[in-house]
Image (tube, rainbow, N blue to C red; front, top):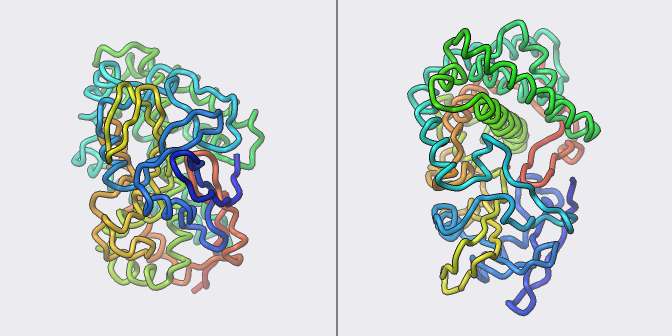
Amino acid sequence: MQHEPQETAPHSDSEPATLPVGRPAGCPFDPPDQLARLREQQPLTRMRYPDGHLGWLATGHSTVRAIAADHRFSSRYELMHIPFPGTEGVKIPSATVGDLTGIDAPEHTRYRKLLAGKFTVRRMRALTARVEQITAEHLDTMERQGPAVDLVKAFAHPVPALMICELLGVPESEREDFKRRAAAVSDPESPLEDQIAAMTALGEFVARLVPAKRAHPTDDLLSDLTTTDLTDVELAGIGSFLLAAGLDTTANMIGLGTFALLSHPEQAAALRADPGLADQAVEELLRYLSIAHTGVRAALEDVELNGRLIKAGESVTLSVQAANRDPEKFPEPDTLDLHRKATGHLAFGHGVHQCLGQQLARVEMRVAFPALFTRFPTLRLAVPPEEVPLRTTMGLDGVQRLPVTWDEE
């Protein structure tokens, strides 16, 4: 679902805001202007949802962070109202088995404890050599093909897809088919029925993989989890969840992040001159782009926050993109500055639902960006910036395609 930029009228509690959506014209990396105006007026404001529900919109960094960490707010899908325009009458079903995003304690706690030890910083950094190898192989292919490629198809999508294969232990003989189906799931230009069919096929593939790992474990996450008390159904659900959560987000960060760096050549030059800047660069790009830009929580009881009373049953929309551009937290927040220490951004969420795979995503990006800009020092857009097709599905931003070129040696 694509959204055109729209303005939201000045609000009061008797005239609630609606969720501003769409990037401002000519500013493909910025949140809607109205979010900043709402944040300046009140970091927690009344909001009218498309289905008529009267809830809340949180835009301030400290407010969004506080709600994300508060157990009095639920992540259960079936309790939420959807904030995006065009969703009137749509109700989110309960989370499927293994979907950690849409459940609360104690079920969430059980899954989280079993998985957290598998996603340690140490373990994810141990995958760096493999990330470097996969990255180099795809850059080699790009170089052989010559200038003018779609960076999304050639680089941004296949690198995280292969790392998901590594994580789940997908056999080498089946990885090309896995990548093809994963690409179909993530292709915003594919018909919806084709995307659903590809996702169904991937889910069935993961379900078949589980008993194979029980019988013949290998050095991968899924094999490790077969030693726990998780059932095959739970393992298949968790595998599918990790696939859905870890592939599209990282691919969109690499694609949109490259677009942002090409649009800020001084920042790309700084990264090229000092690859050691990669850690800070990744954190700043995560803050600046905030591609997973909007979340929702449902109050389980009355909660007083910022002098406002959020009543039990009311939904609160968390604007991560507004929080990550809050000047009270980040000076000159609308400036992309790779030398900034963007500690404390909320791009991976906060609290018990903070992204499990964030360390793997960081490793992939820390390798991908410097390698890309070092290998192709003259990398540039092959089309005018306004012709780059943006991806603006509900809750996740990116680019559909990123045509790039470079000077051959």
